[in-house]
Every structure is written in C-alpha cells, then in structure tokens.
Length: 373
Image (cartoon, rainbow, N blue to C red; front, side, top):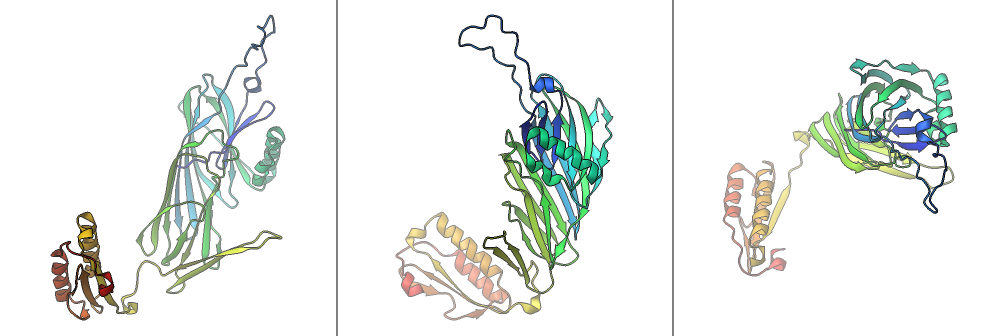
C-alpha cells in the first residue's frame, strides 16, 4: 500500500499535510489557533492549557504501478485518518508529474462521488506560492512547474478515515537504452508521524528481453517470471521515508546488458554506476562445457544438519549439470575417497551413480582437508 506521506506543517491559520506528491490543506483557522479563555483568576504557576489537536495521520498507502515498455500507469490508494473528535474541512492537491495524464479519481462524501478540477501550470503556480508564503517552506515550490489536481474535501469526519484513490499515466524517458521511473516518497522532513503501512508493487513488461533491473533508493524484491517480465515489490510499516522511490531498467541490445549511470554536482567530484547483466535466459548454443570437481567434508564435525544440508546442495548441483559437462565427486574425512578417480561425462547414468554415492555418505573420522584439495 503506497501512500505518499509528507507531513503536517503549521502556518498562520493554515495547516498543510502532504502525502507523497499529494497535499491536504486543512482550513478552519479558528481550529488551529485557539484563543485562550479569559484570564479571570488563574492559579499561580498553573496556566490554563490550550485545547489540544492532532494532525491527520496516514492509515495506509498502496501504489500499484504497471509499466509496459515506456508507458506507465500509477494507481495510488491513500487512506487518511482524522484523530480529532471534530470534523474538518480541507482541499486535496495533487501535483501532476510532467507529461502525466490523470485517468481516474474516486472519493465519496456522504455516499456521493465528488468532482475534481485540473488546473494548468500557470494557475497552479499561484496556489503553490500561496502555500509557501503561509507555511514558510520553499521546498514546496519544486512542484511549481506542474499542473495541479484539486478537490475540496468536506467533511473530514472526526475520529474516522477518508480514502482517496487516484491513477495517472505517463511516458517514461529512455536514455541510451536505460529507462527510469520515480515515485515521490521523500517525506521525512515534513512527516509528523511515520507511515503506518507502505506498499509498492511494480509490474514490468517489455517487448525486448529485460537485462538490468535496479533500484538505487530501496531494498526491493525482484521476481522475474520470464525474460521480458518482472515484478518489483517493496513493503514497510511505521516508516519515515527520506527518499523518493526510483527504479531503472534496460532491455536487450546485445547478449550482455551494459548500462552506465553518472552523476556530478557542480564543483564536486562525480561518481558513476555500471550495471552489467547477462539476462535470465541463456541460449543453449552459447553454453560452454565445464569441468567441475565437487569436494565434500564428511568428517565427524559435520554430523547432523550440516552434512544433510551439504548433501542436499551437492545433489542439486549434480542434477543440474549439463550433458556436455565433466565432473568428479570427492569426499574426505580421515582419508580422501573419489567417486570415479577422474572426470566423467555428466550423462544421466553417471549423475545417477553420483547421487547414490552422495546419499550414502556418513559423518565420521578426522578432517584431511589438505589431502582432498
């Protein structure tokens, strides 16, 4: 669940809470700046406290992203929670990424779908600048060159959740075969509380075989179902994101994928990252025959789970040898014992013989590792 949680900023009569690329401006200045009650006879050293309030919270954030070649559709499901007993009024603002098009927006108020407005860049800039003047945070001007998606939210009921879903599509830019995607998550400097639940699922499909898939920003899980399809995932809870989510991918131009990323700030030394990937599927005509010698420790110190795990791994390796490979299996304890005495073809018969040999191995004796090597 991916939600862009930015923060809760207070200004003179205006509070801004930004989630990812979205903003909620809460109105009702009398709520944020409560007047003190009349000072009749306050007890000494015991001032009358102001009424307290709590910022809006993020209940969940979910992002489902589908990329097909360079066309991407990003779907965001955000759930906000108002922990205050009274209802609020606000405006949801979503800075639209450059070149993106809003496809869908849903939010119900009293069982009815609300309507939203899309403002062009020139009109949007005035709204961004007004927010900056009130909350004294010029970082929000990074969106000044974008269009603005705007919708009024009323009521934001007290002690309840408000769910907003939004999807947009865009065309990604490719540079020398390397394509990059970015999803706004840089919220730490604004966030009043960590994001409760954050989830990103990115489905990637390309016509050409995928080579490099890399995220420099997050520790993602990458699962490749075929040479041209992959699913990238990231999940976290109680997280304060401090960087945007980024993903780079390249497609096959040659049998080995090579991609170069460079970065340099003015007046500083630069740095680079080289991605090299052979892809998922190897062409059988290009598989080189190998000579493989397996050496296994079967001494008494290997008794129990250690030997069973080692035997299981060795059985897997033998089973996956290619027909043109040659192999030998040696085990050692007090003495060294080879299976064949020399390299043998990795045909079905020899692999079966090796598997039977491995299964019968028992832990006993000393450790003649030097002799084995």
